[in-house]
Length: 375
Picture 1 (cartoon, rainbow, N blue to C red):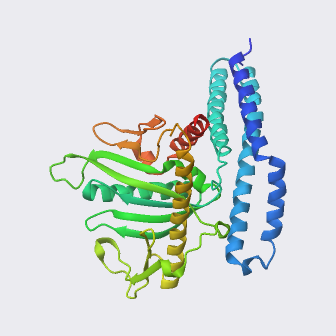
Picture 2 (cartoon, rainbow, N blue to C red; picture 1 turned 90 degrees about the vertical axis):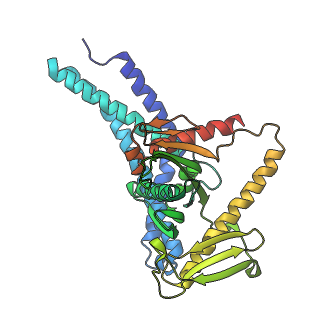
Picture 3 (spheres, one colour; picture 1 turned 135 degrees about the horizontal axis):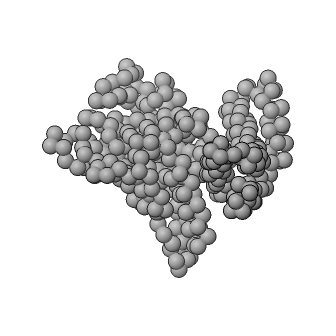
């Protein structure tokens, strides 16, 4: 009597269909050709004469190699699964049960990994391929909110580290007692914006406040904004007369000065009132360049929102708004993190706050695709 159940055979066929769709969307042969082309560019000794272009080439090469490796590994694992079930069939008694359980576990894990790869193929927006610029601001909740904003910053940086993405912190404005008022950082990886854009909105934390000597429960809020990093092709020109430049000394936690020179830069865009700061670079010039990148990204997003508003005005159905409160993190009286748009939830806030947010991101991307399809 065979161990392989017809349901298992059907499941393997379904996984094969999904993986073929992923391979088709990625265009594996074109991916191999592009990797070959990028490897030739990367081997050119003159590439680093233009550092920005060199970093773009090496980043794209690393991402393409990673994508190809992931899809090839998934294909190999899928081809190995029937062999695992055949080996289980050849066993007897408890050994057969254990071998079948191992094969079932690998099949379940493979489904999770194939579905995660499938989500990546849904990122086809105009700016989805770009690096992400993340702004985090503390909201209502006093010192708890400032602490919460810093916890969120750590969560996203840990997520980036898990995926070996480069993070560049542009500015951190520390609160007086604990935590941060705001922070701005870039996540540098192809599709970082498309991936993280579903994280935009208000994040709510419910916990026993570590800053309340009576041990009362506190609700805190922090705002996450995700923007695509501006590229030279975007033509976001800012006339010099529209920007006021102020310089000051960088400050660390508790307001202490961490720099004896006026290297921190604050840019104010006079027509819109948008203010950005950068104090994490060593020189005033580097801070000004980084701050200008952030300002350009904010102006690009403003332009996109204006265009979107014009399009929405032409529609009778405005659709659902998902840019406001979008996720709740409860540490007391029970343990749960729940996305309020997708209803995806987990009961391990510690893991989530340590950067394990891929499940939320994937469900968010699928949710957004459904919303766009229904609009």
